Amino acid sequence: MATAARIPLCSVTAWLLLPGLLLASHPRWAAAFPQGCYPSEEEGLKTFRCSSARLTEVPRDIPNDTNKLYLDSNRIPFLPRDAFRDLPLLLELDLSHNAITSIESGAFLGLAEHLRSLDLSSNNLVSVSKDTFSNLKAKVNLSNNPWLCDCRLQELIRTLELAPGSSGGLVCNSSVQEEHVGKAFLQVMADTDLCNAYKKTTDVAMLVTMFGWFTMVISYLVYYVRQNQEDARRHLEYLKSLPSKQRRSEESSTISTVV
Image 1 (cartoon, rainbow, N blue to C red):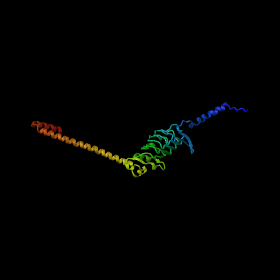
Image 2 (tube, helix red, strand yellow):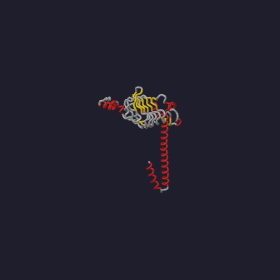
Image 3 (cartoon, rainbow, N blue to C red):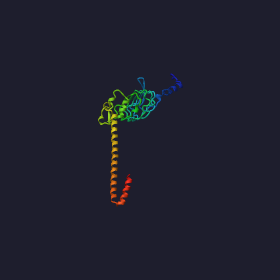
Image 4 (cartoon, rainbow, N blue to C red):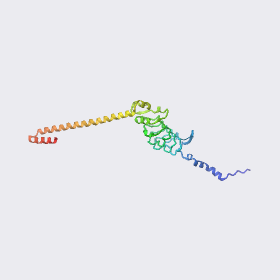
């Protein structure tokens, strides 16, 4: 009977430890990524995908050498300051089809130098400050959000480079001027300077307020004068009804008081 070959104990131990050694030498593999998230390499670029992973916030511990980050089709409602601070090599960021309603100023800090594509389409954005995208050179997709078309949005759009083909999806869900609702915002901007219209509205409101205060002051002064005249008339009638000596004394007192 053939005798089974004996495998040295040290060899068995080495094979058992090999997976652990490989993980230790590749930190990205050892990282505890959220369920549904995984790293890969696409077209020579290091990619991290978390599409449709039911995320409610931007995950932590994303490999800091990531070039493309997909966080689309999740439930993220808010982007806090420094959300992507540790991703200095990020080129593309996809945040489309989430529930984002607000973006804190500084959310994209650290991305200005390399980021070339930012997708925020199909979220719940109504209004965003232009400072949110300060110094970003990326092409931004803001389509399919329920935008309020006003001066703030106009200032934002003028500071950004919109992604090709996305401008048609930038539609007024609400507006400071009712006739703009449902229209493409770039067309509204071409026809109307919303910031100038806002300034005119503010100026008119200020003038109306000032006129109201002026009217109140004048009315009070007229009332005050008439009231004093009525009091003076009554006092003179009273003086006339007094005996002559007392009347002269009262009249002198009244004259000195008036003087």
